[in-house]
Image 1 (cartoon, helix red, strand yellow):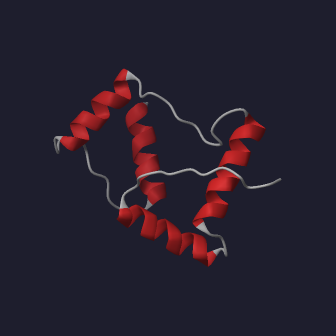
Image 2 (cartoon, rainbow, N blue to C red):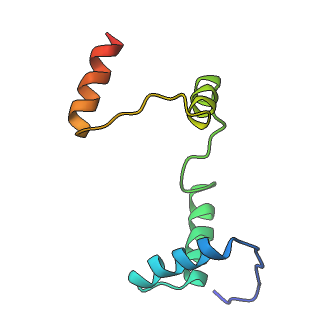
Length: 89
């Protein structure tokens, strides 16, 4: 398929640089990654990952975390999940 169209996008230079480092590790250029994304959008009929508007519970949790009022968990993941499961009962 011929490549005969251009896309110009303004992005944060730090994000671009970090992405380019990751892509280089898998032998892919930014252009190749954008082409891959566009092909996946066409094949799947949408973005190849979920994009959702957060519900009110999620919005409240985000606001709580940003205000520094969210509960912090430390320790091993299994222990944290077991503690959360006990709290949910």
